[in-house]
Image 1 (spheres, rainbow, N blue to C red):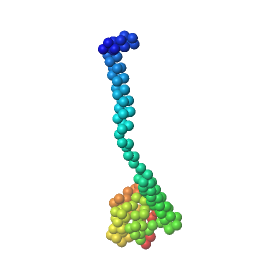
Image 2: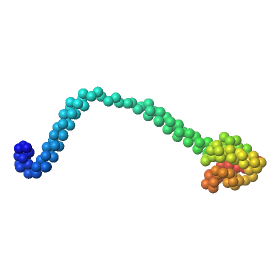
Image 3: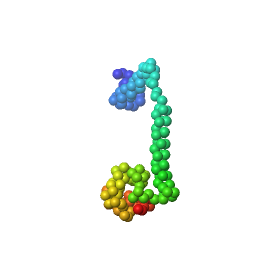
Image 4: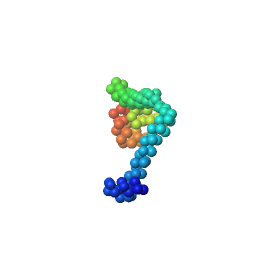
Amino acid sequence: MKFLENIHQKIGFTKNESIIILFLVVTLLLGIVAKLFLYDSLPPKKSFDYAEEERQFEELSANEALDTVAEIASVEMQKTTQGKINVNTATLEQLMQLPGIGKSVAQRILDYRMENTKIHSIEELLEIKGIGQRKFEKLKPLVEVNE
């Protein structure tokens, strides 16, 4: 303790401050010793190569983006080259190509068409569960009602 008293007299620290500084210095020295002697003797950690997982992720992401682009392109092609989809003659698959129309809504359109012999106007689509005003506005330029 004589050592601590000499330090706090020369530097001007109180006894408690000198104890804290000594504790920090000893902790630092123990950390350095542990790093030099203990951690260097441990076997190195195995690193994992994520290249294959990254490649698979990129491939799946690209495929999903292509699917979305393909869907948009097919709807655009229908509008420009083939004209509109006739809801009175369209198949389940053709109806499912329309934006926002899944298998269940497409089946409801077919069921409605069967129950009512045919769809007389595009506005009748609003009577089908799953087709609201917003979805109808998206469908309106893509569909037609011909006999």
